[in-house]
Each structure stands twice: as structure tokens, then as C-alpha cells.
Picture 1 (cartoon, rainbow, N blue to C red):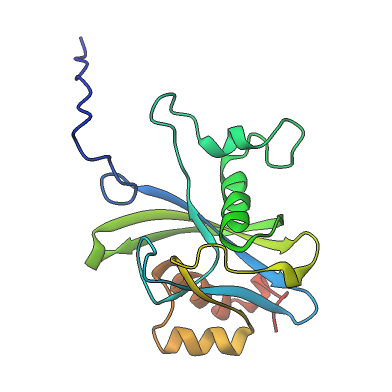
Picture 2 (picture 1 turned 45 degrees about the horizontal axis):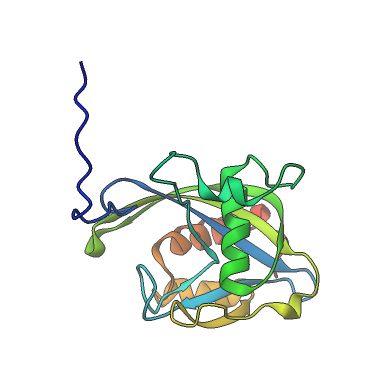
Length: 188
């Protein structure tokens, strides 16, 4: 017989990536005209890896009361994201962080992301995406978490990688894409 433990409202909330494996998502958003990708510099109030360059993305959020992902409920039936937790989360994050709606082109892969100095462990799912509408609409929506945005080509990504200026999961993604340029022919 399993024992049900009483809820202790004074206990600190469990943190994804710290108290359990966090699930994250990221979007490699391309500009087809310039053949570049959108990057942002994580700001002083970012959850982790402050002052490192990263792709847009974030945490898959769960409801503590019904164990369903909040994001699925944010999209009505008929939406391209309805029922797809990971794609819906990355779409929400791009809207929250940069004020743009995206279209998922394809999944690029999943990455294990360990941040030893912060005691965090994540599984991050990464998608290739493009902006729906005017690409010039990209802006910083959360200035405490995002200090700067930039469109970068392959050479600029290589420079960030070599200078150790990428967030951990972005380090893995960029290294992978530089080693296998055929996986992302959309950027120069």
C-alpha cells in the first residue's frame, strides 16, 4: 500500500533541472534572406548560464495540480501545436522572449545538458524554425533575462564556440552543426 504524504506549503517548490531532470526546448530560428540564425545573450536574471549566448527556448512547464503541461492547454484544437507539448512550448517561449510566432520546420535533435557549477541537468529538444510574418518584429521581451539579440552566421557561431561564450546546450548544438553542416544548410 502506498503512503500519501501531506502537502507542506512551507516547503520550497521543486525546481526543474535541480530536483529532477528538467525538460527544455530550443529553436534555431533562421532568416532565409541573410542565411543567419537568431541568438540572444542571456542576461543577469536568466535562470542559468548568465552572460552566455544561446538559442531562444525554455522550460516545459507542468501543472502541479493536474500533471498536464500548461502549454498544451494554451493552444486550441486545430492549432498546429495542439497536443504537441514540445513544439507548443518552443512556440510559447519564442513569443514570450522575442514577440514572434514561429513555424517549426523540423526537429534537429535532443541533447543532454549538464551544468555542473549550478547542479542542473536537462534534456533539451531542439527544432529548426522560421518566423511567421515580419522578421524585423524580433525584439527583446524579457530584458532582465535577455541582454542582447543578434543574427549570426556560421563563422560567428564558430567564434563564440571557440571563445567559450555559448551556453552549454548551445555549445553542443553549434559544435554538432559545425561538424555536420549538411544538417543545417539554411545558414551561411
